[in-house]
Length: 215
Ligand SMILES: Nc1ncnc2c1ncn2[C@@H]1O[C@H](COP(=O)(O)OP(=O)(O)OP(=O)(O)O)[C@@H](O)[C@H]1O
Ligand SMILES: [Mg+2]
Image 1 (cartoon, rainbow, N blue to C red):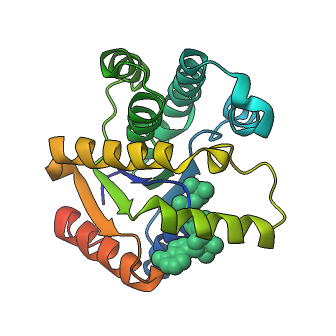
Image 2 (spheres, rainbow, N blue to C red):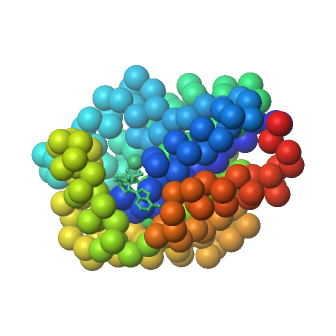
């Protein structure tokens, strides 16, 4: 199979990491050459940026500063990691990508979409995902999951969006739906309330439909 970029999007706790793990396991079973990564934090620079961006005290970052930090993470990630992996023929599974910037910084934070899109386009180096899986569900449901997960894992630094009000997450969800409505052919929209196994099966089916036999 030629190299492809598959991105996973959705609000906090929508199940992106869980789904990526299952898809990655399925890839392993059939011997697909893969690379799993995430934004922010897919490079050394990105790891430093992730700490800054997701630190609970990071709430002091201005919206524009936040936008630029995500863009810095992305352009480094694309050049250092994503493009080489795709070129090497790997199936790249990326936890969040440009759509997250538009949904969170644009629809969520309220930075004018024109500005967000201009920054995203500068940072993307022409790279557009071959498929974007959007996990959609009401934030009220996903935030309950996030709280449970974080208590279970004693996570205190996972994400600062968890503390944001529900309305913010509603705006982000609507943002994702608006973006996918604009580019329906790039998206596979899945019900985030479905079981993880069902979701993984749907993603594998979609990949085979689009790109042919995976191995
Ligand atoms: N399809 C699902 N059905 C029920 N629970 C799920 C499902 N997917 C994930 N979960 C649970 O919900 C919680 C959040 O899932 P996960 O960490 O995969 O979400 P995420 O989208 O990666 O979150 P974040 O945006 O914070 O990284 C976890 O405890 C996970 O076990
Ligand atoms: Mg995750």
